[in-house]
Image (cartoon, rainbow, N blue to C red; front, side, top):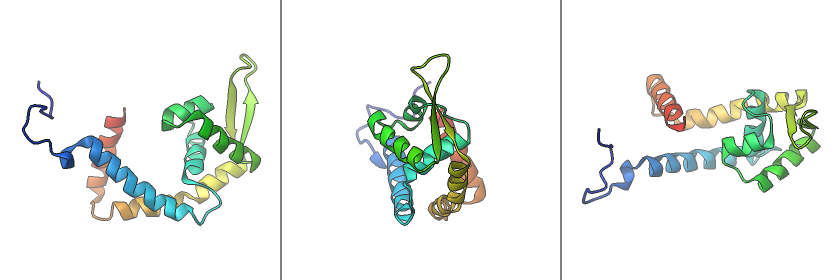
Length: 147
């Protein structure tokens, strides 16, 4: 089977490039979300970290960096801020002292969940021209692409 994209074609159509389209969609959505979070006492990245922890998808800083493709130095500052505010706790692993486990506090969970409606509104605005079925298909296909 040949691939969908033909590198030999005379005209490369950027507007049909999955790289361009996913990046453009991401930029537009993140810009809207960042605007909404500007009135909050938390950044979108901080919220995503709390949500990753809430959903049990990460337990260490390295898990977060890998999941978000985020710089470890920048993430350290995010985690420091979340810890100072009492949203997360760090604890060295008893079996391997080099590993620092992260856990979400009750305040962190409460804060993360309180901001879900704000994010949902942004996503719903972005998907306003999509049917529920189209949205389900988009989510399924993006999850497949991400895996």
